[in-house]
Image (tube, rainbow, N blue to C red; front, side, top):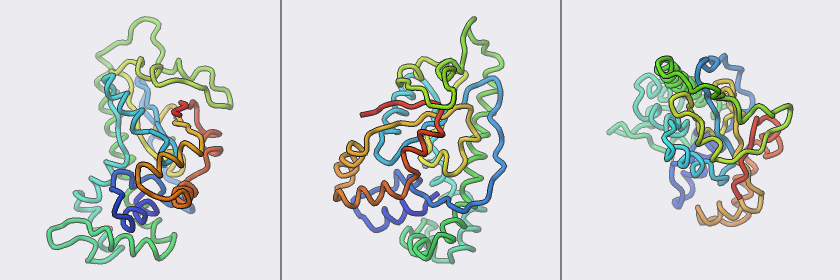
Length: 253
């Protein structure tokens, strides 16, 4: 999950590591048997293209009291702190991956990823399953807590998605904010479909913006040219493909 976007970060001093899962190369990864989401709660995946405003939407959900699991943050934490993962990545990349203080050396990982798609896939095979398991653990914990918190009569966790029948339903963030916080868990994941993380949730929501808006936001946010913004956007699954797989979408122009 740190591949192509990681290369962008490592080669551009104006960027940060807050979006390192945006454009990972998952083509050719083997199918992974991720656990199904637990019953009794509603797990919802929030996804969208780079610069679409996923974080803004999720911040509004958190402001309403909802729990949001950020795949990007979890992946970075795992890579930095999990001793098994650190050893596996060191075995894959080499001993220079972490410095003498134990910090990840981004330039070393970037150089490794530059060697080809298969190198990115080796990293993803280590990181993806652990991020998925961390989310599954959070979902199971919420489901256990929800047992003692019955929903109000007539409450329906899937109500915003009931009209979905082969094409995504247009909704707004307020609809999601109104879902019961005790029974709802959101996942923010740029690679929801590419990494098959949609299997971990009951419903998926695409944060949709026009190509022009997306381009303008990237240029302003990262201080890059229009051509570079287009290049970054091209590394992701197309908006058309994401829309075809989503259960609902939020227009975030």
